[in-house]
Structures are given as structure tokens and as C-alpha cells.
Image (cartoon, rainbow, N blue to C red; front, side, top):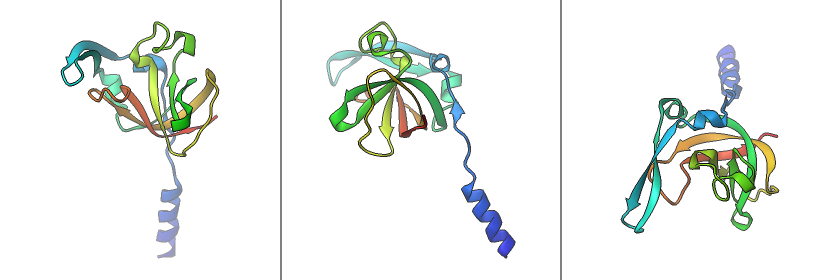
Length: 142
């Protein structure tokens, strides 16, 4: 019985490493411009490719530029590009940013601070109140 308990504790303590993802992989997506009737506005709706779909719900890790959206409400995104070239201000596409939903409240990052984050990747194809990529329970690893 004691050996079983030790084995069980060992298995519970074992954590798998997150999948290392680069921004090129997240570019496996096509966008279609569609009218959102509720808001009377056009939005880009994604169709995720197979390499991105394989990441749905998985623990991933990605490195990029931190961009504060609303520091008071702890809203940040991580971007493949610095602020001047990111999706919001530059020519990059919506596949180049990830919404960060932090595990711990009240984080603080400088604009364009390069960091690595990990969390559970959620793919969002329809909710225009959120980005297409969401990292749930995000935490900075460096």
C-alpha cells in the first residue's frame, strides 16, 4: 500500500512541459470578413488550420512583446511584433497577438518588454469581445 501511495504522489507531482509554439505556427489560419449583424460592423472571422487546431486546450509556451491594453484592469496581449508594428498599430494580422488571461491578478509589464508566457490555449472563432487566441491561466516564465 505504501508503495502505491508513493507512486500516486509521484505521478501527481509530475508536470508536463508546455508545447513550445512559435508565431509562424499560429499563422495557420484564414480570415473571412463578415458582417456582425448584432453590432452592424464587419469583423475578420478565423478558420483555424490543422496545426493550430491541434493546440486547442493544450498548455503552450510562446515568446513575444508584451503590450498593455488596460493596465488598471490587468488586460495585456502578447504580440509577435513590437507595439509600432503590431496588429493594433502596424501591419500585422490578428494571428500575431494573443489575449492573456492571467492566473494571478495585477501584473505589470512595460510596453514591448520581451517575455515568455505559458498557459492553456483557447481558440476563439466567434466572440468578437475577445481575440482569436486566448491564453488562459497565463503566467510569465521569464
